[in-house]
Length: 176
Image (cartoon, rainbow, N blue to C red; front, side):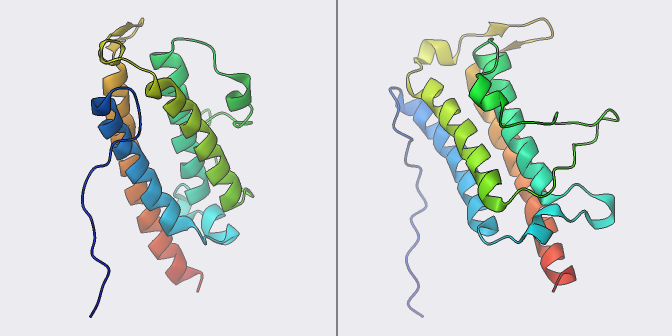
């Protein structure tokens, strides 16, 4: 049994402030595991809704949408970049607050959307100072720091990763 030795260490994403880079590494690590697991996902795996549950494709769309929303609405406090907004032709949620069902988009398209949003996100955080990282954005419903936004997005994506991995395993069995 000659398995490759794992390296369980945090390697900060290259940014001006290494502390911020360590948090961004966490975001990237969660994303890497999702992309690795789903790299060969079929269209049926992406689109199928088991027992009315949200599909994997819809969860991927939601993850990207929420990341963009926190970036523009809370961190930058500005309108969305039109190129990013164009990646989301439907709203994230239905009128009843369920996630919108996204169907017919290939895994490559989902990954492209996730990557484009993440690249926009990282571009902002690469240049961020620790002062700005901890500076509250004073919004009507709450005050929020970019530091908390990154924590929340790690938690959010890790939660949905668990849902995706559970659905993926069940779908592979049911579609076999």
